[in-house]
Image 1 (spheres, rainbow, N blue to C red):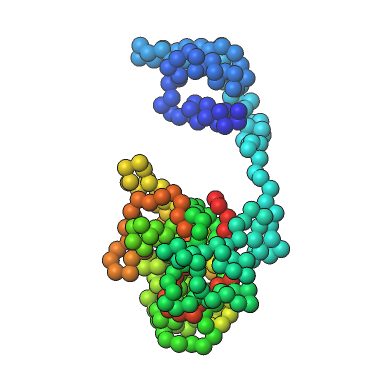
Image 2 (image 1 turned 180 degrees about the horizontal axis):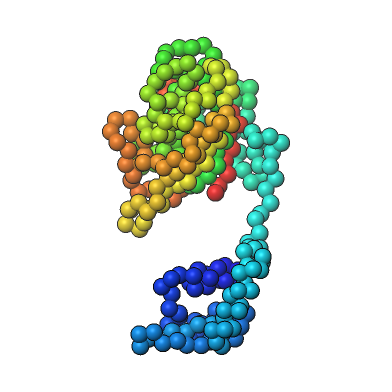
Length: 296
């Protein structure tokens, strides 16, 4: 009811609104705003209809509505209850646990085989050469929490140091497409800015470098809004992403320009509304733990 009232108020506030073209619609809105009947006006030989029996009655009701607090109150639908975790790291009650510290049962390799990365002591580590791993379940827009750690022993520099990636909407059918948030050891390790930790890889540099030292656990909290394609495969709405790195905002509703490309410019290709999350095997011993996701 309140939303319908908002609709009517938006109609009547438009400078070019002349009235409703039919009596039935005007009388329908009479029931919404609390009067009866309708009245008509003629403008350039066209007849238009308004709620209420006359203009004075409509003006009076509109003046009353403008000062009533309940006009701007929305009661339905009521938000569902979600119980938060003890800290921001803990999964809320509606989250899906993607890694529970014990096994990789929620993950597979691209060919469908069980994930072969090494699990121990509540975390798992890339097993170089075994390939990327993907979630068995597919997701669209979501909130993702993931914790990662680069090796304590520093080996390599630039893109060859603690490199992995979190990919949203990985579509293997289209040839390794996805939207990547870069994982990298960016502590005192200079590389191109749109390729360091927390970047939308090869697109958006992070606002700041919030990286911890090698060997220390770090967090990404990511809000991902999936792109929308029309029935002909055209892009209706691009993807957007917000990222907190160790609690620091580093991507603020950044518009994703297309799926990740190492060489060339990003572009969109139409894909399913829900696809897997991917973690990248970049041959570095990056570890992960405490991964959970909420569908949005």
